[in-house]
Figure 1 (cartoon, rainbow, N blue to C red):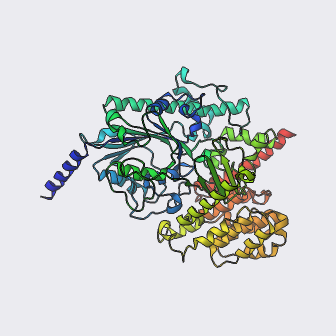
Figure 2 (figure 1 turned 90 degrees about the horizontal axis):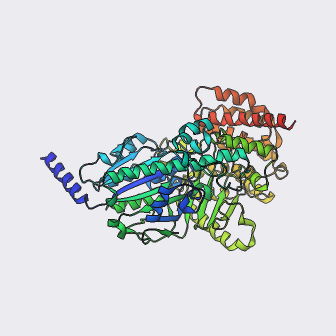
Figure 3 (figure 1 turned 180 degrees about the vertical axis):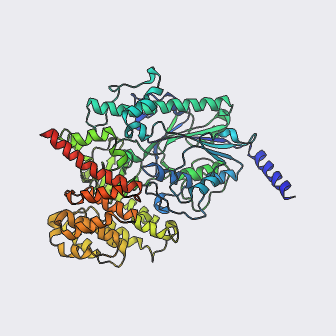
Length: 629
């Protein structure tokens, strides 16, 4: 009787679901809209994407919530921002609450067949169980073809042809085998057939490398065309709404991993068949909208489109249908650790202006990340920087960042002119500062806890729920001291030194991080207090202070402490220490320690990668000295 009832309910659901639209997601990797034809790039060759835009709706203000793949995909699949779940650090493994599900699970409850081909990378603990619940099938062969007859589908196809591995990181020979050789001769884009972004040195070697972006996107466009032909062949185009977008910004130096527009903004197109054009709130085919959308909006939109009830924990907008939410005036975006390169940037954008606060400004935009450092283009850029072949703009990305930036991307698409110090923009700057402070405080951003702390929290509960307990996580106090980071003055330094005695360890941590930006002259009068702080019982504080003391005073005690933590069994502490050493001037005392750490059998990828970057810096210095001589 129970089996009969189940069969009846399943049959009813499928029959009822026949009137629902199929939904196809076409996702690509590491691509900014500046490199796609329909977004105004006349040098790009993207006819398939351009045709989707011509027949669909093109979004000019669509944003990833992160700047590297796994944090972005964490928000995409759950609909919850990483700064609430603790999933902002690339390829971490922290638990999320049981009540947070992959949104395709809700679509299944509405009778949909869900398939994913093939990338997951959701950046959470117990990912296999999470995937199994979300997808009817997730594999390299998954498609709509696995569904029951007349069952609506939600199918994702992810194309890796524009991934950073193709555009820069892997060797040129690898790129030739995996991209260039797959392009027909007429599709290949020559090294002199495009304009270079102004923050790159326009040389033949740089052009050879940058042409990889255009050719990789061209191959991606071809692959999308092949998928759409399959959709047509199966007679499904007339019943399918198509979404096209990239997972974050361009996989080139200064794009992906950076909390600026070039890291966040993505191409985004929605195509409606005639049958469902009435669902579009943005007008007819070929329309362009400047409505602000982010990846936080995708889950609630899909659930509502499928006919489901959006759960309370989802705060993104519903973009389509009778339950459509009111448009937003601005978005909060975030950028955190990418591989072995820790960072913390929070961004507010209204589409035209992008305001970013750098909470670790002592590191440059071109911070050391192994997957970027192995690329030939990065090696050329660093060599040209050492040899003083770059102009002021091109040099800037190798130097410490300002603690805040404001760009007018409508008139400065490559973000070359920081308007923070332009008095004409004071009102806009003040407004966006306040917006960022308000939104971050409302979110109770858990990623202001060092990754070491998030690891400790995750042993007993989820970071998502922990952040809501003000007794355990006094976020107002933490944010107040973190907001001092990057402000350079004796007055600020005095306040930070005072906060090194706070009862709260995360407050002390941010006081120490802020002191990283103070100069030696300012710190001289606080040397004795810094020496005391070397003995802080909270390792992230002791490590950070040790880096400050070593850089400015070169004491034996600070050197030994840093060597000790390089070898820590806790990978978060080891990585934090090695990352600081990447940016100190005197690296000589640590060379042998780093070599030994790299060869230790229990080191994870990020720690080994940090070691490789440290040793690589020394090789670059030696090679440059030989060239100059």
